[in-house]
Length: 452
Image (cartoon, rainbow, N blue to C red):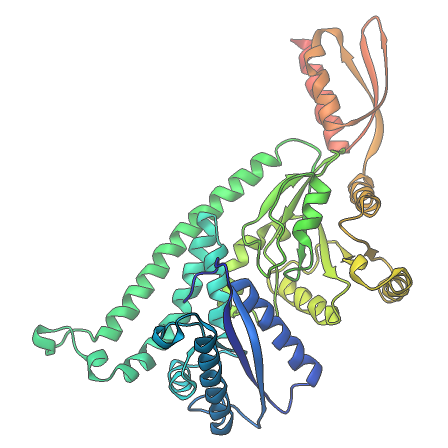
């Protein structure tokens, strides 16, 4: 595996088999997604090979003719790279095709046979995604979740990998390779099971810790939460930065964000709103990753409101919308109130094309928001919509703060919207807007302050 950060991206090729039950548009969309994944991993896709078959080849995924075609291409590309390189006559390491990326999950034997047939390394789609997650995970929780997913991917492949390794892989661990000991493969699988169990215990402890931190954040009355969800690269991080005024990573790469980021809505409102960005979704996300990353989506489960961010400029946005809906349903967030936010409208052609796209979207999704996270006016409108959502259950009331309890004045401003203030001989009188429970709690505290 080559490092991601290089001055010059490594050349790669993509190959996929289109089965009869897969439409042309769905097939091409999946290929485009894999090319974007390759870019995130640091590869430049220089060619795509497609084969239509009734089923995958059981020995090497692609048919023999397509394997030969790819091998010819790899050899020609290697020759061209050496010819273009200074001192090519003595430089066997000149760049050629570094990797063949397969747009499906394949077995170790298929990968090994394919590597032998085409003359370069092979990665399937699942391994590409796992590698991206591995490189981008920053927090302790995300790294543990990625490791579980990678180990889960490896475990069922060890037996088949041992077959490829020959007698060495099946050797027993008893004295001299004989006896009742475990085979190397069995030892490796047991170590993987033990490591997964150890990591899961760590994750369980981290989940409790996060729940405690979340409870502390929510101890203050009048706190609300919004979670940004959606397809990876839909502009969630850009929108997060625009809504909160914070510096969060914004990159034109799939899965640039893996760790949940939480910031306060800015300008702050009553009630105070926390906004969280979550890991993006993708078609055919390996099930092990959906399971492992469920805890990174806990913010979506706990949120009072979801902003489902969709790339309006992507021709395949309806498929992306469907993928997100399915994953949210899988993690139990189907019933959380949701606003569909069609982002990147500024990427849809000229002004006339943008207007037409917006009209069509509003007709199909009447309650949606169509915007660009890079337009201040659009962000302000979404900000107002979020605040309005959380203020719909607020009530207006008067609070009497005795002169003996003036130290509690800041709590009124922190937890309520102050509409007016006046004073008399007994204390200050505030007309406020806030949640009923918050107002009642403040009244009780004022009474106890007066008694003290």
